[in-house]
Image 1: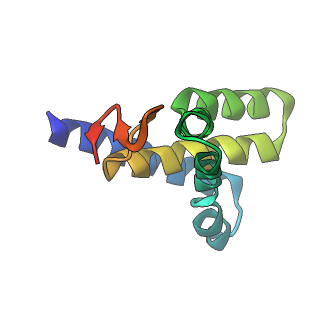
Image 2 (image 1 turned 135 degrees about the vertical axis):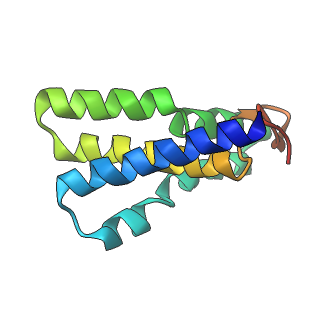
Length: 114
C-alpha cells in the first residue's frame, strides 16, 4: 500500500510541475519557492503544538487547491503560484514520509513516526 501512496504523491507532484509550466515562469523560481513552505516549521521554536498547527496549515493540500482555485477565479497569478507550490511541496514531503504533524512532536506524523 505504501508504494501506491508514493505513486499517488509522485503523480500529484507531476501535476504541480504541469500547472507551473502553464504559468510560463522560469523554472529557477519553482526550485527556489519549492522549499519556502518549510518556513512554517519556525512555529516549533515557540512550542510543538504551535509548530504542528503552523506546519499543518501550510502543508495542507486542501489549502493548496483552495488558493489555486481562488487565484483562477479572481485572475491572481500569485495565488495560483502559491497553490501550485504548496501542492508540489506537500507531495514531495509526503513522498519522503513527512506527513502532517501531531502536537506532541515533530517526528509524530499521520504517516507514522519519523
